Image 1 (tube, helix red, strand yellow):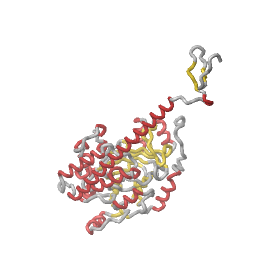
Image 2 (cartoon, helix red, strand yellow):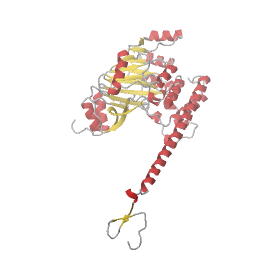
Image 3 (cartoon, rainbow, N blue to C red):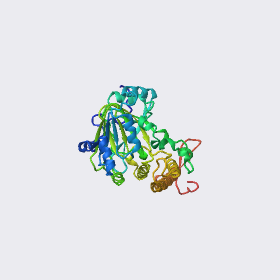
Image 4 (cartoon, helix red, strand yellow):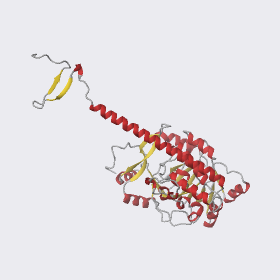
Length: 422
């Protein structure tokens, strides 16, 4: 598309993508396995036996009735991903072309592309960063099959939440517990509950785009529906929290091989909180999804939130401004209903409250540190400006004097006073 190139953007060949991370991602793909797919009967057998699910395991439901899916997500805590194949219990899929047309009508978008990157402060590796691109630019990149990933779009479905989750009160914590219910004093900037408003999203990517291993922010349960295209969803499931913490503190992908799940039109994947994943777009892909907090997995969600404070690089999104208020409100609601209405025990609540206190302290320390750094920068700028105002002595001990108003010339005088008559 002629005339769309911006001189400020460094362009890459779509085939090579990002040389800085492609080798690492290739290693992840080469070591990936099919994982341990479980049938419904195998899943129930593991639960009855009381044994942990093997790492890399996930439940596959093919041709399942809506009532079967509903009972599984309602009756049991979500501890491993669930893949619902070729979901038949919803309206038609939204095509890639349809979404592209709608996005063109919306204009500029926040786009992840290898044309815009920065180096990770710890690893020195290049990271994709979102940048706002006008429609003519990003749509031209789609036409030329350049690798772009447009995340956090509004959902393109009228009812994006899967039917078997829509009416389940256990999965409505993110929606039903507003940040304004928090006992803490709300920062005026946080009065808008941004976490509740981002429960639904759309994803739009061209072929060849990939993401390095990350978790979805704030320990949410994520549902992802493949509307059109083929997505290779690499994930590390059933990892204990200590293993997730080790990965968060390292500069490397998770040590275990990834489980590779191929998602196609109509497939829906449900991921538990804190599941590292690294999706790859085999073709142009259009997806829609939702995010949830569940009462039964709220402790794990809190632990993921705590990890993100120390290791923000484990997620590809900025923290929600209202996170502290939201977590405090959840703790308050949990305290009122402990052991009832699906909320876990008081022991789990106590651990959760300690995590929230740690998060509040860390956020406060970060804010104070940033304020000190900003003050130091302002002081340095003022000192620099003051120094520039002072006139420096001219070479040879001469001082520059103000311009002669009558002649317009420059008067030069030595430091010694001249004798009269000379």
